[in-house]
Length: 182
Image 1 (tube, one colour):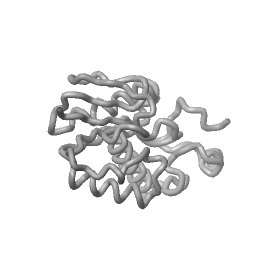
Image 2 (cartoon, helix red, strand yellow):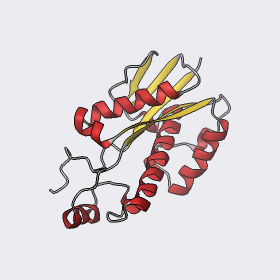
Image 3 (spheres, helix red, strand yellow):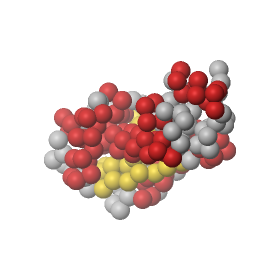
Image 4 (cartoon, helix red, strand yellow):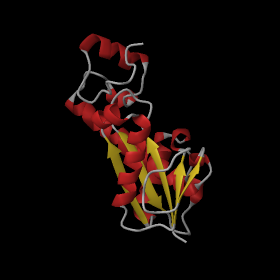
């Protein structure tokens, strides 16, 4: 049975895309490398990601952009990013395990698992892929617009990020429907 894990990263930030990973692991994947991406150190995430990219049966990333988040809301944008990730996979799954309460509209049997990123290896791998892809995107965006410190907080609602928004205004990647000035 081919099992795909799907998870997203970036629901809580004030800026940037929401990113989803879809991963199909081989039977012999070293699952001891995996955990919820938020629990791993950046170095451990990079180690795990390298193995995911070189050993997985298939992987893909999907994105939903700030203007889409503002238009359809963060939940729907997360599901859209998940759908995009799954549709980019070159392999089709018999079963898709999705972190959370909801599943994307895809042509596969899906099971939602609350806190699946802490229990299902396929979802853990997808969580790592999504988080690293999003973090790298935010770091690279900081090279274009260095006013906000995205390379440090990745768009999350830190005091520094809110202060910089108040000082210089919002960028084109800020989510206008989020409470930025609280």
